[in-house]
Amino acid sequence: MYKILIAEDDKISQKLAARFVQDMGHLPFVSPHGKHAYEALKAENKFDMLITDIMMPEMDGKQLVQTLRGDSQFMDLPIVIMSAVVGVSDISSLLSLGATYFLTKPIDKGEFEEVIRRCLE
Image (cartoon, rainbow, N blue to C red; front, side):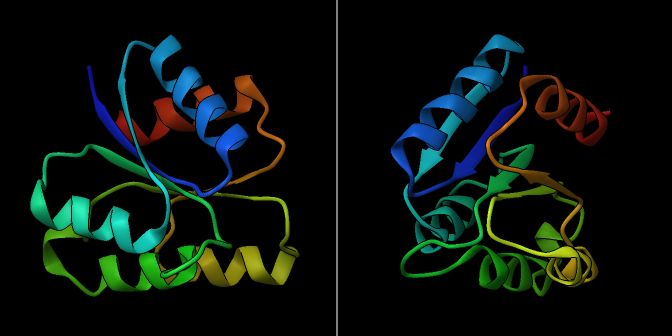
């Protein structure tokens, strides 16, 4: 069983991602924005993976990825971006910043589960 942190400000996406994580037998923890997620990771570095939205208040997903990849203790943390509002060049730049995978919203359960499995292998 893995602990997965979900940084997402949209309540529907939070619930959907958390349910998919639970359905896979893992423990979801939800953060309402990037700053909260970063603080949760720093306070308890026992999360196996991060799933984050891009557009969030306080600290967006891009800033979160950059901050985590700049911290040696999070260099190997799998980070999945899920967003509905990006183009191909945006996806490319997010992956080059250090995101592990990109998922489009609305979330497809099969694709979501496959990406989670790949990240946790």
